[in-house]
Image 1 (cartoon, rainbow, N blue to C red):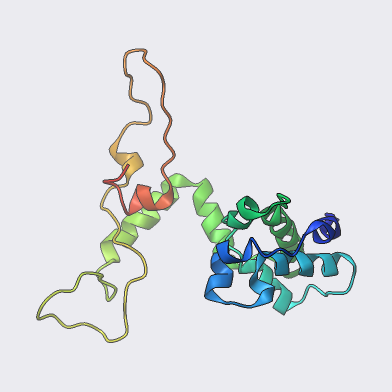
Image 2 (image 1 turned 90 degrees about the vertical axis):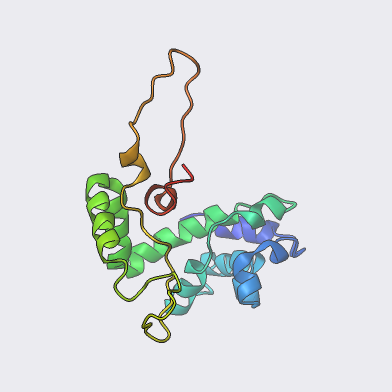
Length: 185
């Protein structure tokens, strides 16, 4: 088992991490602060906290943005601690089907391309983002995902562009830049 209690004991409880935490800013509760996560993990290690549904929800609420790690004067690896407890959560509760599907799609780009092409074809079915004047809109339906491009960035350009022997540059195109914001890449 990962040694959560070592980090829990090393935490100064100085709260320098708290204002940097996006989750704590949205839900200002000690359990959703980085030092609260670390304290709970120490209690879990010591056997004083059961890994139940409530604890699962708390540990899965972290975005793993590492803002707290950057702010911590002791450089405590809060993100790594949470990643490790999530491994325990996965063993106990399993992984949701939609997360498994998403990870599978990430490993199978051609199928993900088909998935997004289908999304492009059906994106105007009730979830259109643009306000169109004099058109019928379903109430309370607002789009939370940006428009999908007709052709992905990676399918628009070759994998390698020969520049005549000059230095090689690599670029990471994430999902949003690849399928939604293709003009940015």
